[in-house]
Length: 316
Image 1 (cartoon, one colour):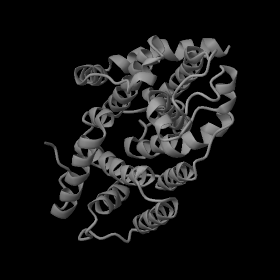
Image 2: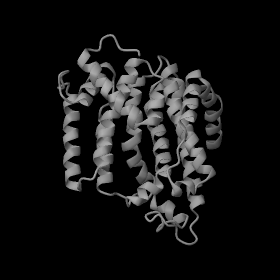
Image 3: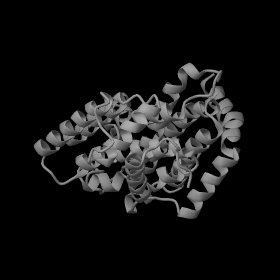
């Protein structure tokens, strides 16, 4: 395994812990970051491990007050990391790894504050009336991750349109999050959560059906899912404009992760009712195939020559 030559033993151990968390908890994410060189892979694992900690607080069995307290404690830890106040011998391996990653890469750590804000929205049980309302949440919990990741990836010198790279990373995060929302409709409904905008639910007669989840008579659930799939595809097309700005391995990482979610979206589109029967997922061999395609450069070429021009034509 590649290792960054300047990483000390305690920091290397901290990164190993974060990589173990990532490999165990984030199968889709892990397939993508395997394509990165060691220093970027370690930094991405540190970002994931910290983000996972925040998510686990929001999804845990604590009461609202206790969750708020733990999230604010996590925000205080983030402030210490931002202030370069975490030493190598700190007992928290995630803090040690993320602090080192932030020293080596221009990571906009404020994105993790946004993630905490988004999880607080979950803790409060917020609902979303319009897509514009839901976008605020998606930007906190996923768009911010895209912008954080871009801090690790960087853009190629002289890349055309690089001033909009952060915007495209944010939009790609929205595409992934909307796909997640569609995939997890049943699981979220069982927890009493509905993320899809109430305006969209009403449009397709599903306003009272997703929290059971039992659809009311006359509901056009397939129509609702296809409507959201089209929205996600538009976000993917826009977000993919980021890929030509990245170096080959970073581009392959993004293409692999996004490609897995695009294939997931394809499955949901073909059988919308599947999301009510259980979690839709891809087999490991298919994820590995997408990752190999990303590394070969196929997906990046495919996107830059075909997907992006089609997106432009749709808007003109």
